[in-house]
Image 1: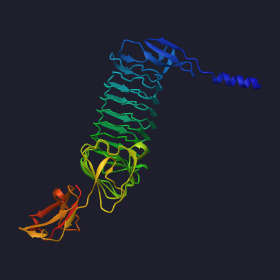
Image 2 (image 1 turned 30 degrees about the vertical axis):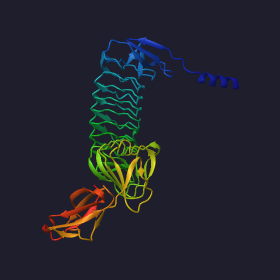
Image 3 (image 1 turned 90 degrees about the vertical axis):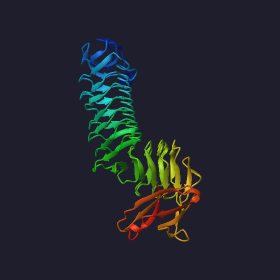
Image 4 (image 1 turned 135 degrees about the vertical axis):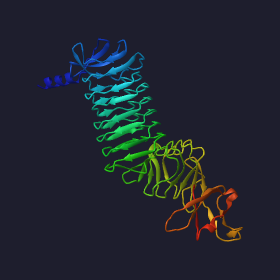
Amino acid sequence: MKTMKLLTFLLLALPAVVQAQSGGGYNYTVNSYTTNTITIVTYTGPGGVVNIPNTINGLLVTGIGNGESTVFGYSSSITNITIPGSVTSIGDGAFSGCSMTNLTIPASVTSIGQSAFYDCTSLISVTSLGSVTSIGDSAFLECTSLTSITIPGSVTIMGGGVFQQCYSLTSVTISNGVTTLGDGDAFEQCTSLTNVTIPASVTNIGLGAFAACTSMTAITVAAQNPTYSSANGVLFDKNQTTLIQFPEAVGGRYTIPGSVTNIAFNAFGRCSLGSVTVPKSITSIGVTNYFSDAFAYCSYLTSVYFLGNAPILLGLNVFASDYNAVVYYLPGTTGWGTTFGGLPTVLWNPQAQTGGASFGVRANKFGFNITGTTNIPIVVEACTNLSSNIWVPLQSVSLTNGLFYFSDPRWTNYPGRFYRLRSP
């Protein structure tokens, strides 16, 4: 009896013998556990419009591609492909480099492998992803002509870089039911994508999911989402303690909310901001053991104003390639050296001088001296009613040689006027 049990175990442990066969312009292998089903591994037909059959030599076609080589890829002779309803899986690289323009995934397919449609640069439309539950890494990477995609609610696993560098992608519909948006870089460099809505079901968004989406104006999160939130189009965690992704195309200046304690990986990467104000609540930037890239490649960025102590840098390349940017810090804060994250640091300490001959009315203008660190930028603002808290910018200046005389020729137009200094 012991010998019989051991023999049975050994027989079960033997690897399945797979033999390549062919028929009708296809090479295929018979699947190990169901000998009446097959996986297509190469295509040898004439091209043009390809209608993959349900059966070949009486065997049911359930798989396309086994990851060893592309099946239909890099063939300029194929113009369109129809996938039969018998197929349940599309393997790694199965269609990579294909020249088809339209694609419909039947409802029978539950998994799409890594790089399955990578570099299908002619692919314009994906009509349906069927009932797919998992999409592998880089599945549609560099499908540069793809304009829109609907991710069905059946998807629970979506790998990293799935739609990365789909430069023509303008519209993404994420159905409620999807739980994961990639292990990272899911939509990175989708430069035509303008906005996206995250449904309540999504509880895991990979690092830098929308990095370098340079046309993005808003990321909106469903109010019922238990993990994420959005404010003014910016993606945060639910409690707004981590800023995850800033919509790249929003220009000008941005002040991070005071609830935020961490700036995530690639949160502002390639943004078009000129100025960012960082609250004193921020204690760390980046992710441990990761390249941070938090503000990397922000070519318009000139100023980053920190209101508190120097945060801990958890990753490298925080300000990579931000050649024109300067970090400013306030008097009384700690942890600052001559550089921070590779950028030069400058003490931002403007003071309005309320004494001396320069203060008051001179030549019918009310004015005063402003002193501080040489060449720091400032904006002078005015308000006529402090209870309204409406401040109007009057002048943007730089403290050349650490001094600037400001004067207001319109001061007589108001019964009272208040002034303050702020960062640009």
